[in-house]
Length: 401
Image 1 (cartoon, helix red, strand yellow):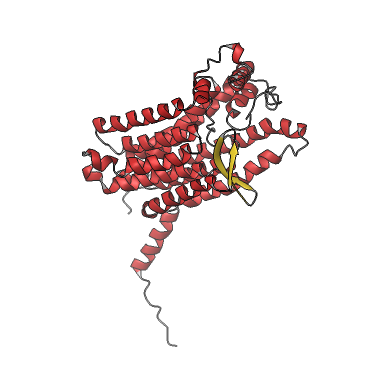
Image 2 (cartoon, rainbow, N blue to C red):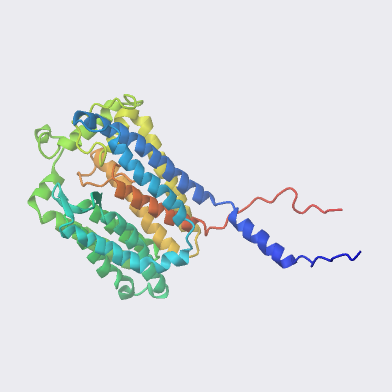
């Protein structure tokens, strides 16, 4: 009987298959876990608080009490898988998408000045497409960070010269920010300025060159504020003066009252008094006040701790990466998310004037949530490039006999 001999198995082919399989199950870095877990927890926390903050007024208006959280939940269900999908993208692809992303975001922002644009509270910063309301400036934040990182990457060896640092970053950045200022949204414009300055800082430009755009940014914001007497009146209003209760300080005073009435442990989830028509934008810009009222100091500390862990994870990516594009883009995104959180919480506790800046992950607003989750996906993609240090196994180095 003739024995059929099998062809010898290719050792290199088997090794390639094992390497390919191993890459799929490679453990993620600590930075990945910190950023992903805090983003998910803050989003979930935000959904709970949006439900609590909006259900009372919805019932009073005869609407579905679950309507607000269901709309927010749709964007969360879209944004979370998108975050993990983007985390698998190679960094080279993100570099190539920097220019198209900026052009697309600016074009989308310009739609607010067309018949699709919506004006609310004096700001024209939304568009209505087939019944869906979008805020294009939220996507402009991420696009600006990626674009500045891509431009400065090409000029890495020339960042000691002022014109290579500023051109085209400052003119194009000013143009993008100007499209938001034209819609009278000072809060979002300030966040965009922070992103631009954050990218320049993490690019490693010399301090004397970094100070110039800082001064220009401060002068531009002050000039815009001084250009309107009504705007200056609201900014300069001292809300410790109860004579302004019914005018410029109504929202700020009720936000502080909500925080104060919560005490250490809060009134209990769902037991806020301010959300019953007293505090405007309870589910949006002032959701942190509802957290303080219902969950007290403990709830506020939990939110601050989650943002702190997120910041630690993002800064570890910035510190550990050898890629200047990752360092600059991650720096801009981190400054955006953390800086916006500081501005929002500062407004609620009365440190800053009301400027209409949402709390990332938590405030009601589908576009803002979707944009910040996409930005987290980019951070996660960056964190995948950080090498994972594995502890040597006890089995390693053992001599087999």
